[in-house]
Structures are given as structure tokens and as C-alpha cells.
Length: 165
Image (tube, rainbow, N blue to C red; front, side):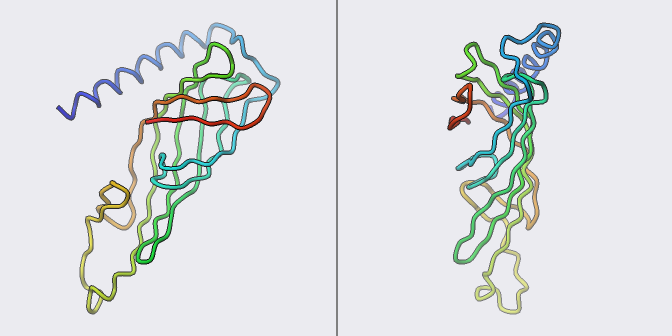
């Protein structure tokens, strides 16, 4: 049963890839002087809790394929999490304001704890640890992620916002 969402996501990404091959031949209605670039904050996204990301389109268009990379994390009383999410995404639009976003990527995660008071001599293995619903198996990990969502992006700059799974 768990494989059904994986199969659906794989089919969706394959469909996006095939349609992108056709889209490369046709001119976009939303061409721009330079590739569109964004810097944004993400809460609860690909970097687990809090991220700052940079994103750019690979073509001089508002839609199409793009790359994103960021840095994030959080710190608590007994633990620290540091993340570096990177990914490739595809934006689709009909009006250059409302976008459907689909993407795939990976997030490097570093977990550090200060539970020494619970481990006399420091010889215990605290893993696996549950951090914001994600099971951490070791100090440094890499997790894959898929993104499907909505994005509202003004044509001539301004505040961009969205929601994604």
C-alpha cells in the first residue's frame, strides 16, 4: 500500500519530463529579459523546519525548469538540526501569476544532541531520534523529497507565497 504514492509520484514526474521535452520546442508566452530569481523563507518544507532558499529558472521564462538550494535548521535546549536542501523544480502557469510547482530533490541533515547527562561516559547511541515527525537514524543523513504545490508569484516582483506537500 505504501508503494502506491511512490508509483503515482513517479508517473507524475515522468509526465512532467515528457511534457517538458515538448515544451522546449514551443516558445513560452511568458518570456523575460533574464531568468527569474527568488530568495524566500520556507517553514516546515524540504529542510524540515525553517529554511532560507535561493531559486532560479534555467531559461528566460517565468515558467519551466529551475534549481533551488538553501540552508536551514533549528536549535532547542538539547538538540540542534542543520539542513541543506537542494532540488530541481518545474513551474506551470496559464496567467503568469498562479503556478503549479512540481519538484524533486535531496536534503542533507546534520543532527547534534547534548544528552550527555543521560549517557554516563558518552557511550550510548541515542538513534533513532524523532525530529518533527522525521526519524533520524544517524548524525548525518540525506533524505529525498518530492514537492507538489501551488505558488502565487507576482509578475513584476513583490511577495511570493505558496503551499506545497
